[in-house]
Length: 89
Image (cartoon, rainbow, N blue to C red; front, top):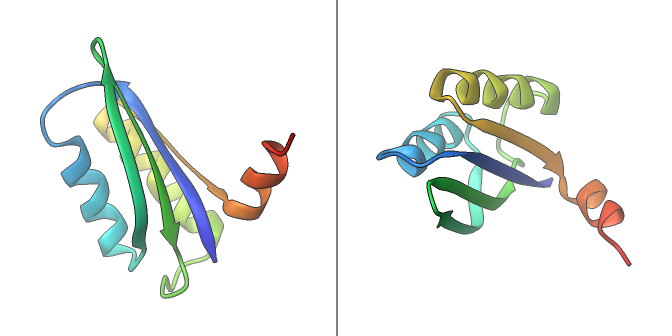
């Protein structure tokens, strides 16, 4: 299953590394990634493949939320099909 991961917060060194390490630890593959810094705000969106992940989607979401809180960021994951349905015009 593919999903969209979003990361938002105050920019600092190491955000991409920590988030990617967390995803790798969950056996989640990053398919595509885009990031930017707007003034002091870091934003990143990733398309990920969760096929090899042994945890449930809810467990992954909880893990990413907790990692975000630890890092002072908002990290969210949403199923790609739901994301696309919400943004269809």
